[in-house]
Length: 278
Image (cartoon, rainbow, N blue to C red; front, side, top):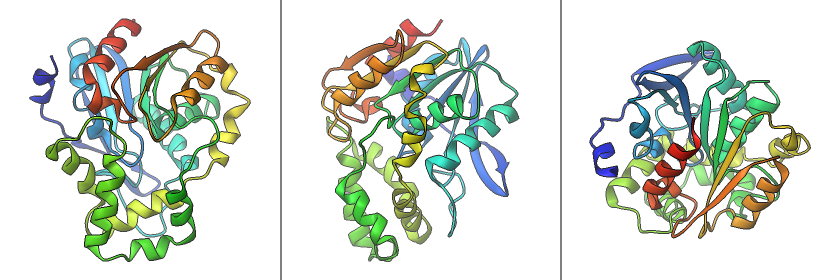
């Protein structure tokens, strides 16, 4: 099943101008809208093993968050969670779609929740995969980058490469293939990518999830939460806590999977989504 999806060419052929900054996106298929939102430090390519399974019956949308992947990266750029929900709301308006089904991972989960609860976007359903959603979150590494962003941004490339590879490998429970690792690391290489990598970490701030914490029980659509049992970035107990806050939310622990469930267990993700999406 997943092999067939791997043969689908993945690309972001379209550009959306968001406040003078380019945001890259793709859309394919026909039917009711289904939107995939990636997290950090990834890009929309994280959905390459998932999204193709829905294009025969759905109009599938995917994009790179501002400052990520193929979207614009530049000095002084705001790329925090306080920016991404406004971008997502603007994209939904640009695409002229209402009430999409949304599937969101990691920071994408916070982005989707903020777009729903702050910007007022209505979704037919929301699937959250190991989302950054409730406190506490943020590692000691994040705190170091907060303090020393310029120093990290100026590291020799070989040291940055070692940090980058170790960081991304830590998201998966199963060993990542060299191909997958390269796909996830590629946007963060080079002078521009290196600065952008530490920029997005330096702008991580729990205040953006605290802002919606009291509103989470007011989510207005059916919710499915998938969580890797072996997630070392955000413990599964956080997922169960989140599920308890959302009325009638469904929760499923994905066995043998870490934070990067899309690589560790793509078949499980596809199966659960097909069961959940109407």
